[in-house]
Image 1 (cartoon, rainbow, N blue to C red):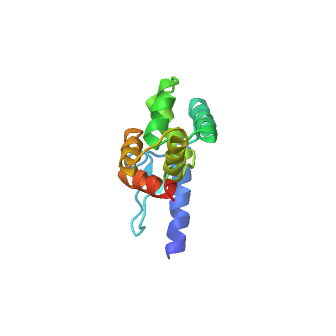
Image 2: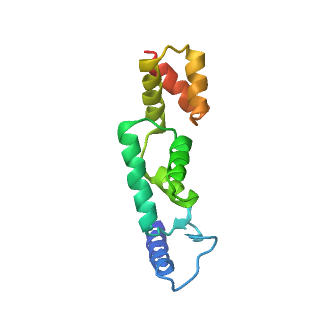
Length: 139
């Protein structure tokens, strides 16, 4: 029975995507008996794709927190929506980015663990990401 519900959900999602029906609550559809809502994927806009390309380019040469990367993209002129799309789809591992950023700092200056942690927080990393970054960079 669950298999058929998934097929029905997919079918309804396709119908919603092509505009024959409207979705319940934005772009998700609740199907009775399903554990998850079906999310209808919408194609990225040209500007979102450009923001994603720029985000990947930044990550290729420097480390960023999700918050910091979004801020940088907005500084570059991308809208909040475009920047959010980019940081949510760039497939960055934010913990690994914290390690990379911590190592970048240690390469050019001396930091205590506490100072480095505070710097990573300032850069926009979460507490868990900053802690992980400091611990890995100090090994």
